Amino acid sequence: MKELIPLNENVLIIPEKTEDKTAGGIIIPDSAEKEKPLIGTVKAVGNVENPEISVGDKVVYKKYSGTDIDFEEQDYIVVPYSDLLAKIVETEEI
Image 1: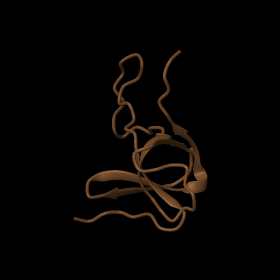
Image 2: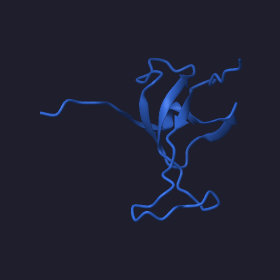
Image 3: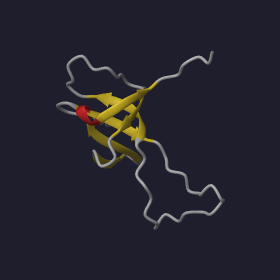
């Protein structure tokens, strides 16, 4: 089995799938320009000193950041650690 390991200060992310329907129920074909998702799940972290994220965290990254990769029938994006904007965390409602 092969595995992708990000090098340097990069993060390997599995991007969330985009919605194929609009709010009104119109189906968007695969050939249409779709906006790139900005949220994903961390799959691996490269050589980052004191990272604030770990594998399995959901993160938000910059809109035009990263390199898309299709590896072993899975879509990934490799993003520089400095292009991560936020970590999504679950909180309890009061």
